[in-house]
Image 1 (cartoon, rainbow over the protein chains, first blue to last red):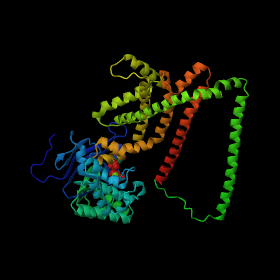
Image 2: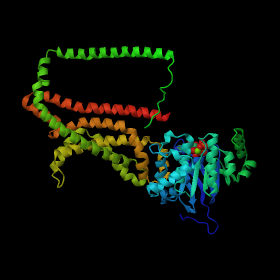
Image 3: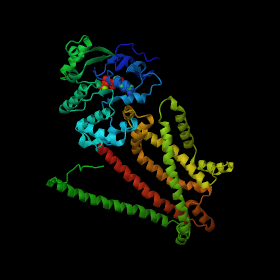
Image 4: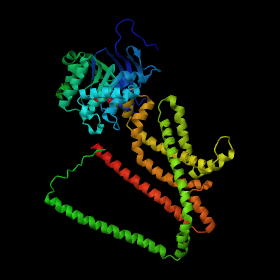
Length: 262
Length: 289
Ligand SMILES: Nc1ncnc2c1ncn2[C@@H]1O[C@H](COP(=O)(O)OP(=O)(O)OP(=O)(O)O)[C@@H](O)[C@H]1O
Ligand SMILES: [Mg+2]
């Protein structure tokens, strides 16, 4: 039950060790999604998770943010196991930002209120201060004029960027991004990707789930291919994309290439 | 909410369409004529049937006497004013208590089990007791206990009985609204570091309540009528006043007076609910486009 800090070596920012997750346990449609995930994310690293649809990329991100409970293993943030009972999950979530695959903005709140809700209520930032910061960030993401609009008046790409701003408001130590480009047309993809590249350049520690191999190749320090609930293969992008070790990885990359996403 | 007109009025109307709209107008006029005619026939026929029945003159004297109408009106109106006050108390108390019960029931995690259990027992018990029994039990039973500090006014216990029963139902309405908010909204709120309570308060409840406003308004309409049940405790609201008049005159017109008063309040309320529901549905279908 101790937080098992490695004695001396540099403690990784985020570490998953033997993480298991099964949905619908002990029911007819039991679904073992994560089957011993080992993953190390060093400070300032950008780690990309790739793999076929349904392989558990989103599940990993949700587990890291403690939005799903894991059935086995550990998730360590700065060397501290955050999955052990008694952890203040809210405090952990305040240190992590996440952008969901489907944005999940609050439909009853304006963009500005969406973006400032966490800062004001979870971090106790004063309204005027939170709004000032929100306006700055929205401006930077080209949403300056949209602050007062409701999410259903925004395009997919604008929703996406608002969700990124919402996650960035709290200055997260780790940013989790789930298919940030899935809803965007190519021009917007380039735009959002350049934002992420910029964040990476500023040293933000990030974990991304993505189908966008070109992007993974571009920003990732490390790419992890998931297969059957494990990290089958991990390597720097140049290596993994040009010289995959496993047959299954080759197949996957082959198919992605055929689909024109490499 | 701002809405763009989906069909710009500027667009020139092609002649074929103009012809079509002319025909449509004609058909519309014909439809209204049929509607008016059938309404007149239907209600006129009904009235004629009633009026031609052999006992009609007697019934008219007992239920529709103009002099008794005038004589009973002031007292029944006083009673009705009390009905409205009781209704207002019940509405406010129910809205609050039901929300508390619904929120208690939607807390997650083993630590909150006792709270959830309490909410479940509350809804099961108070939904399970016929309202009239609850009014009698609380209205006559509790004051009889003569517990120190407990009010013994029949009005008070009548309001409490109605509030408990209606809260049990209304809590379920709120809960259905809470359940209809997608799970992802909760995750999204918790991901910001909000506590369970904050997530409910700022992310889930505003959406949940919006989901169920029409259902809530329907409950209010029905509550407004059930306030009449407090009359069995001897509280002199509209129905009781009407009863008192009848008891001394053997004329039932006072009941018609009370009926008209209740209708005067509930019909506009019902229309309001319908209007709101229709508007809400329109706005939602528009938002989905
Ligand atoms: N709440 C849930 N309940 C039950 N099963 C779930 C739940 N969430 C995800 N799953 C299952 O877990 C598996 C992994 O889902 P996940 O969303 O993590 O995949 P993914 O890799 O993100 O896929 P995609 O690339 O399509 O986004 C899927 O088989 C899915 O059906
Ligand atoms: Mg996913």
